[in-house]
Length: 191
Length: 191
DNA sequence: AATTCTTATTAAACTAGTTTAATAAATGTT
DNA sequence: AACATTTATTAAACTAGTTTAATAAGAATT
Image (cartoon, rainbow over all chains, first blue to last red; front, side, top):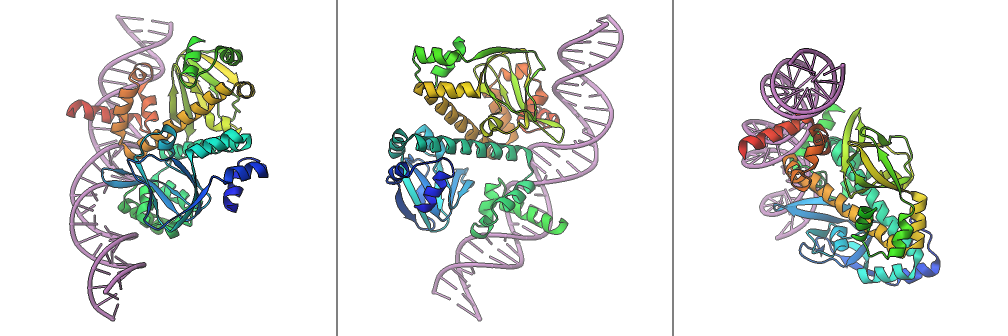
């Protein structure tokens, strides 16, 4: 659980005893490539941390997968939209590789926050971090061209392109596979 | 401050004494049409509540205003991105009408949260609400056509179209004025 | 090695926007 | 009321994507 511990401490100072209290609730879980952690219609009651692997977070729009996010090592994740609101999910979480994750239930999160002010602060700050990321995402969707967003992803998360098929990256960028292929061709020729 | 009080209580139960404690820090402020509450480069240290009026939240991208949001009666607002991170703003807040707002400083927010668990809960839940709204926004940008987003805005905030010029609405939708005009023409003709 | 299945590219026709520029309509001012 | 200014529409040429379908390339299976 060293990675999990380090990631929590990157948000807030947490004493060893509070950390120990919090970590006791996390349970290790393994998902094989192709396995679903969540399907549309289900309620989601767990918060996850990626120890190893890659999970896609997607919705089906008119039968087609729309990838919202790729969660890789060091990410906290869940279907936060459904989790927060306590409503059935409209999304899917699928292991794109064999994955090792740690999970904690909503009830245990509540226990941890009740017990430790420092860990509640971690919770608040990680929520703020999510706000910042979503804000940037909105700005990028509004102000950058598809080509610019492709180049930015290439720069920010280069390894993703080695582990995820291109048509899923296209979906993440809001493109068809054909569209992304065209962008790549354009870039190959021009610059 | 009745509207402010009601809006806070729509998020969390707050006792009269905690409410009184919190409200004492809010200060009424008036902005004339065209006035700026914030300009790019400035630090933002206040959180606002719209009592009356309409404020646009926009960035300049290559000299052109890109409207992120219109804040109207009952909205809490600030440049949350800059406020949270304590960095200079890259945005503008401009009164599109004569406005009455209540504002509270970051330091006073901290005092209020330290003093009242109920009001801290309001703070957390309003942050969650912001998450939900931003999440929906991302989904709409990804999955809806411009025409669909126009129709949805028309349905969700019909009065906006009476008080804000159309070219600002176009900007909010991520369109040029010409583009929005075309969409409206198409809708007029077809259905 | 050959076959099958999945993934990526290309082509062609199409679509919903863009830009620029002209015009029309609405609003505000003298 | 006349004029100036701002805002909205239209037209024309253009652009970056879409869809569908065919092909090519790569990976996994027999």
